[in-house]
Length: 91
Image (tube, rainbow, N blue to C red; front, top):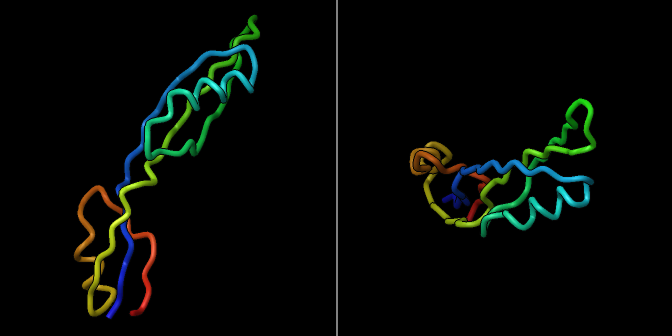
């Protein structure tokens, strides 16, 4: 028997403009949805300005559930659309 852990696959993107990297990070953290983590935040600077634009990508990390099955195929068959299998262990 195997037990698998699954979690929702969901991302959200937020764009902020700031005058420093620290300020951009603070602004992104202030807009972080509950259950999400900041996964990526590339920063660009416009021509002729010191204003930074950061595009933060947040990924969902909560909502973990466990599923069980006799083998890997049985576990894979139970993973719903919009969810990802993150671990498998023998029980």
